[in-house]
Length: 165
Image 1 (cartoon, rainbow, N blue to C red):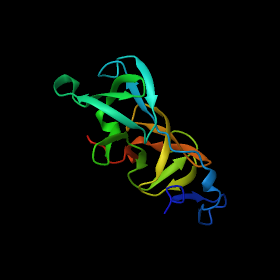
Image 2: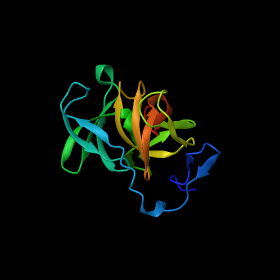
Image 3: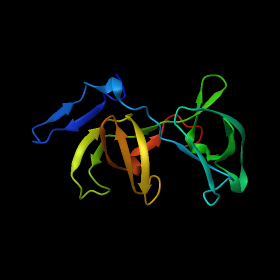
Image 4: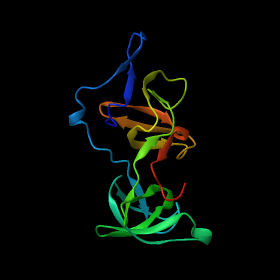
């Protein structure tokens, strides 16, 4: 089943759930980028973003105080990404892992439970990840799937198949 067909939207009357299945061929690709820093840590300057699914050349992954950071090359950019955004792809390839839902996830109109639900994502739905407020997995993240966008709690999102969990 297509990742986009797994999106279930609550209809406006609340009478039930309506599975969206038409018009997905034209949906935008999943890009959920990985942020590239000039050094191994969040305090280093951001120098680029790499879209999900992109092949990267891993130069090194670090232990000790730098643990969880990998130095990568993507096209002409060399920098550091959090190891948790990388996933194996094939025998020798590494990609930036896509963002998926961990469990059934309510998509809300705003970042909080006080906002109305605009849709529901089934576990494993691949989403485009926008900005997160209060940090990754600790707050609310803006997501998009096809033409539908909203906010999902960060604890319900993860990178699929990552090297480091």
